[in-house]
Image 1 (spheres, rainbow, N blue to C red):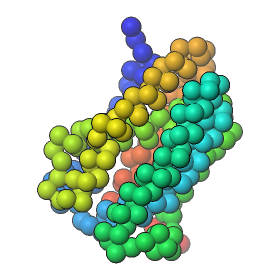
Image 2 (image 1 turned 120 degrees about the vertical axis):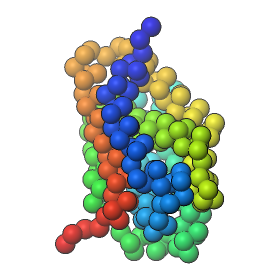
Image 3 (image 1 turned 90 degrees about the horizontal axis):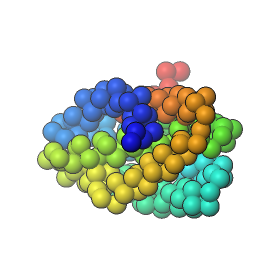
Image 4 (image 1 turned 180 degrees about the horizontal axis):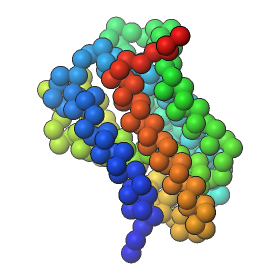
Length: 221
């Protein structure tokens, strides 16, 4: 039986393929990624994650089932607690703290991605919000899974890979995809199309986020 997740993956698969061969990710696995590039990525993640947590909470507000409300409320809290702690430790590896990251400021792609997520999750329907947030869950899980097979000779990069390739994160994403299939099964095609459109946009933002780190993106003026 065909699942909506399979249909949706066909929409984003081309973007995912480009992500896997991006020099940021190939550099993670072979250990050649310059530390200053990974540092930029970590700093930008500390700006992005609070807004991603807000987007998850807003998605939960729009959910129609108590289980979905609970899921996104819990994932929002987990993003703040667990991933925030991870990035505090990663910042410390560079001799930085949260104040240093705040002073560095959010780069254009970070602002654009977070703003898009928040707009859709606050102003869109629940299916639209779900479409917008799923790629961040799913692409990180697929990237983590793919990179875990190779890991990295760099201990810091290997640690990051293990976080997203590990069983706990994979189980979290599997639960969201089950919910995606359940919600999409009852939607008219027009709503499914909007969901797919938002998912493609945020999948593209995932590529842009890694590319921005690779370029160490900053505001041009």
